[in-house]
Structure formats: structure tokens, C-alpha cells
Image 1 (cartoon, one colour):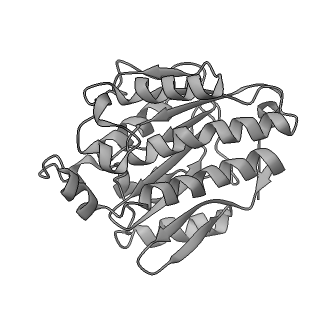
Image 2: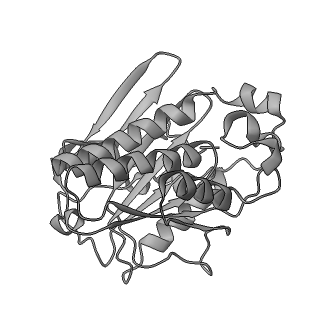
Length: 268
């Protein structure tokens, strides 16, 4: 069982979403509902969200992502945050840049939600939030392939989260290969609209994003969770929760040292 830090229930929660593609745009569009529900149940500030993505909208993005042809060429992060602010009356922010070591993270950050499509990008997030002086509390990673994927909420080992048995292990600790850039496949060209649908189930991003949002909702509503992630497969219709249990993490890490686990790296 994991219990949220009490301070996160007493002030606005600062969230950074990295990546505004198929999964990131769904996460971003769902966060206002979480924000409203937190306020309705007595949270004093709800969410303060920043979207980071340096990609511009392409024609193929208009198939599986919430963009229109009239927005082609504009920055995804800017379009999304303006739309959300206008509809919900928010003052969230969008940064039209790719996250890298020179850009860094806006400070301070409570949650970073990674919705990136490469191991190199995950390695970048892992390196940034693992610095001793960084005070990021949580890293929620969401990734998928064509018809399956996972979401994992972890507490990176940094200046904020000390080494202790009940610290939520991150996706990088449980599945080290997911932050190994040498395993990325950079040979695939940009998708056409038809290729985008052929390469990914049209609802895999939404399914994973909704499960990830439901996990955050339970954490803020109940103050604690018994699981901190899960694995979904749309072919078999199966789902498997990841228990917040040090014994489970120990077995997973030991098993993964013996074989390469099937953890997905893409989300766009």
C-alpha cells in the first residue's frame, strides 16, 4: 500500500506532461476532470499543469489525435493548452520545446507524466529526475505498442525520495531496457493516415490514458493505493495490476535480469 504525501492534499499539485501525441493529448484532456473532481471534494487548489512538446501537428496526427486539418503546422502543446484553458477557464501552460538537458524541467514539479515514443526520451526523463538536487515526487510513465501497453507510477530516487523499502519503483528500475536508447528502432518513416491506423489500434492510447488517470484519481481521492500501475492487452482483453509491494518489485527485478521483459516503449 502506498500513501500520498500529505502536503499534496493541501496545495495545488504541479504536473508536467511530456509528450502531447496519442497518449499525452488524452492524458491532458482528462486532467481537467481530475482537477474539477479534486476541487469538488475539498482539495484547496487542484492541479497546475504544464504541457511540454516540441512537435508540430501533421496531417497523419489528425487520425488518432485530437487535432484538425486547420491546425496542421501548429505546436501540439500550444494548441492543446489553449483549448483546455478556453473551455475550462484554466491558466495552464504549454511549452513548445522538446524536453532535453538544456531545457530542463520547470520548477518545482510534483508529478511528471511521460507520454513519449522512444527509449531515448525515457532515458532523458530518467536522467533529469534522478539528479540528487531534483525534487520531483512521482514519475508516471505510459507506453504502448500496437495493441498492448503499460502505465507505471514510481518515485524516482532523487533529493525528494530517499532510498527506502516502500518507495514506489519506477519503470526504469523495473524494466531497465525501456531506457536503453540502443534498442530504439529509428528506421520507421513518418506514418501516413492509413499507416497510423495499421500500426496502432485506434483506442490503445485512450485505454491506457484512462487507466493512468483513474490511478491518479484514486490516489488523490483515497490518499492511498494498493497498486501503482498495470499492463493491458487489447487482443486478449486481459489486464494485470502492478501491486505496490516490495516483494513484487524484488521478484520482477530478479526475473528481468534473466530475460528481456515485454515492456512497450512507444506511445504515439
